Image (tube, rainbow, N blue to C red; front, top):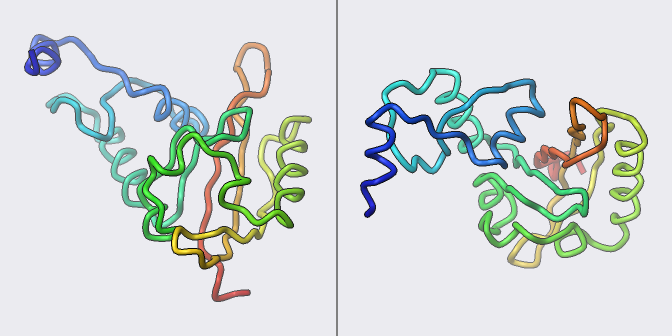
Length: 168
């Protein structure tokens, strides 16, 4: 039973990236199919760029997030644990109100509104985030919106966060 996915790959059936990772690749100008970063099955025909993409997403010092139109996290890179103390699965499904002090929520809402209104990429935004241990850390957040290529309708957001605590 557990060998079926590996057997399908061995026979040449291709596996596609999960929707979350396809979305991130699309946001940064990449298309194609491949395998999930979790490595559900090992394939010998994985393109080097797919391996590099997976390595970057999993090892970046910056936190990479995919937020739905409702601003709830759909994907959070493992680097969130180093920066914020949260496991990715603890952040997925939650919106900024869980991690961001109320005084910064208006800035986030305004930045999201600009993206929805037509900007493809937002200006860097300095915000404070609550760590799991209760302390706060200052991050610079840069967001992009991914639109439907045929209709232009706004979809999910891709967010990159980096620690700027020392600058504050």
